[in-house]
Image 1 (cartoon, one colour):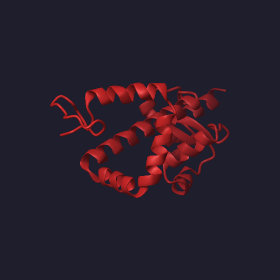
Image 2 (cartoon, helix red, strand yellow):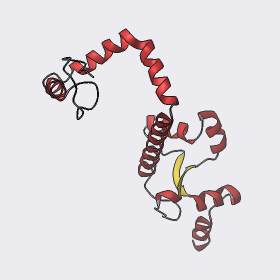
Image 3 (cartoon, one colour):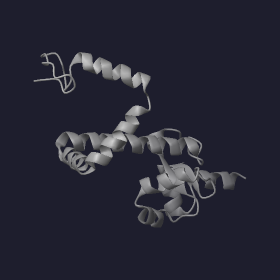
Length: 166
């Protein structure tokens, strides 16, 4: 097999399509010309768009492609959820629970089901809230217990205790 740049014979320890000396040259060239790679990629995309799209689609259908995409999706979802929890105080506004696995987004005035249906699920809601700068007028973070109690009984038992004591 030959190097794709200099046509030298590739050795068994050379990985990929170019030899080690060409890899070093490309690495150094990119350090000296940092913006050029982006320009070259745009030119390559414009010239070979159809073929590159077909290759991307074919890769996404492979088992490895499916696993990689799923892992990236989970990572993005977890980061977005953690950002939401941090933006809304990091703990349940009712009882103070701070374990992230127990926390959920609460619609203060109700209507969560309708919004999830309209926005394409919880992820759609989180994307919109992030875009809007995490508005606090209609959303807060509650633990799942407080959220369910609010849904079923109209008020969380923690709030009821506070009202009775006052």
